[in-house]
Image 1: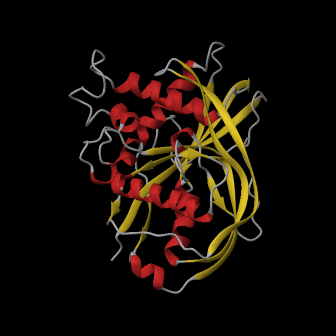
Image 2 (image 1 turned 180 degrees about the vertical axis):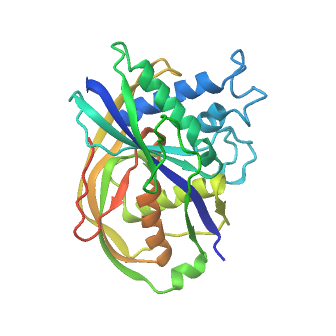
Length: 319
């Protein structure tokens, strides 16, 4: 019986700009802002209220996707009134800040009940393209939307609303995992976008293999508890695994926070490192989980795109 499970969908959006367009920060930051603004415009019917006090905040698409309001007695996030959002944005097209581009591919990943809102996500992205970006109103067209290889964009530029989600599951045995057979590992981990998580209460490049595995485990617990299935169980990272061949640097992106009304820098570790030693079957699953769902904080901004290198694979880093 699997006690860890999560259903998800990866919607891959291909965008074509009417003329070359330069991003001043990571495209994922820009499209997160666009998505929030458009969903608020589409869904909000009580604009005199804040989401926290609004009577519609449990059913409003904007509030569910972007506010994710929790009861303060939520067991695994005790005392917190907001949770991790049920989506993640990835920029699939390599980019350089201030370098013009005419095509962009984004993946928007949705979890659990949020999968049903994909048509709203599509409409929000589509409408933003018709209105144009920023002061010069550069327009773009959504030329394709694919999920699991299936083209969802119809000839009339509406979305085909029958699509099959994917899922992952694992039967975690808790402490029994630590005494089970271990698996040798020598795997390079690429941080394709900044990995941001705290070690010892601060963001740092000086993290251990155990810190990294715990980072992924925390994300699994959060996502599966909120949007899938998770039975609480103790986890202690394997001691016989270490980081070798570390080549990391810190990369920040700047963006304007409408909520705080100022420019904010946010980033994390980029580069690569190698995990060497022995890990459990559950930790193998954690690495696969991070390949699919990312790791660390602010994945809905496009951070935490983590890829385990497979033999012969070419992984393109994004800047």
